[in-house]
Image 1 (spheres, rainbow, N blue to C red):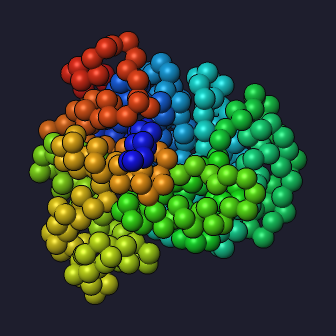
Image 2 (spheres, one colour; image 1 turned 180 degrees about the vertical axis):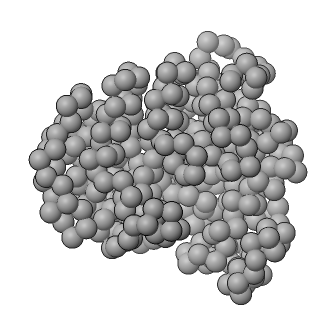
Length: 346
């Protein structure tokens, strides 16, 4: 008997080749179509707390998960104040995600030192548990130091999600998270990470597992181009490289490890690699693919929908997938496939 399909949520793509404010179209569409949760990350465009507040004002019901925030960049007090501010000002459930992020973001963009990332992740999680629950955090750790602060707003009592891929981060998630999120993984790799999490969990049930998975229903060529571009930075990264080799793309990994220029790598990435770590194709193909993630033990798939001129704001993809699992319930309409206008949603 096949397992039930994972719950579906939506994660803003923050695509660098699209207008930055198009994320508002995607967010409002996700709310109107009945998705229960919207992930609002932070990259090179908007501050996540500001964007979360604006989205909260322009939507009706969807809950918000802010982050993942890089714990080497944002300290626990900053994260707690931001999450509590959004929750109180928009009157919406707000959860929090944290992670280690990459050396490019931490060291090159922000000029911070990425010291003992797993320890920083664990200490940040411990502090946030107390702060988000309305208590004081007193931690004089190896990396994180905070003492005496307490929120003056109402405590958001946010659930804590930890982004993990390596063994140490997975252990931190097992000990500190309500939910672990994994990114850009094949179902086989997801299954190994789920097993690792369960083995690392000592007391009680293991945290839930969510996977960010890129998505494009009936994709136009521009969608493949966009999704290929997002894969290039990961091709030679330890852990990901091995996963791509296992999936049958050793030649691309060899190119990356040989120091090939990103433009050369982009041209070399085949559509099959995009499909291997994404939900790309017809609704029927994507539904089958969701079943593979469910079989791997993934509880929730956060759709990272492609947005192109052929599908601005990812409206077609979101509407087409809204009917795939019972976790999405249309709000205010009995026709989940009703056309949404990106112009109307701006």
